[in-house]
Image 1 (tube, rainbow, N blue to C red):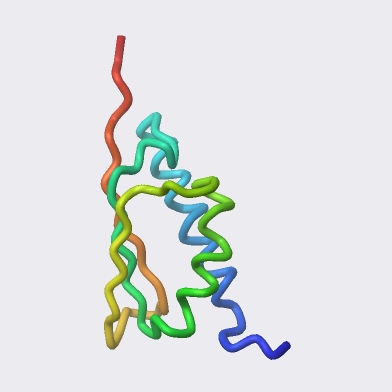
Image 2 (cartoon, rainbow, N blue to C red):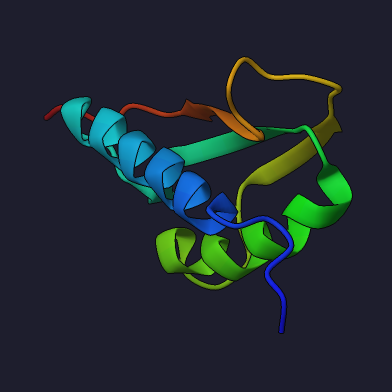
Length: 91
C-alpha cells in the first residue's frame, strides 16, 4: 500500500503528544477534554489517519464533541488541533 502523506501520522502523533503534555501541566488528561476542533489542510487524505490515531489517545468512542474544519493553509502543518478541557476539581 502506498502511503499518501508520508510523515502525516507522525505529525498527528506529535500534536497529540504535545497536547498530552499541555493537559498534564494543568493536571488534566484526555478524559477532561470536552470539545475538539481539528483544522485540516487536506481533510480527505487526513481524516483516515486521524481516525486511526485518535483511539490511541482518547480510547474508544464516545469521544468529546469533535468538529473538523477544512482549511486551505496552515503555517508549516497539515493538521492543527484546538481543545477545550475542564479543570479537575481541587479538594
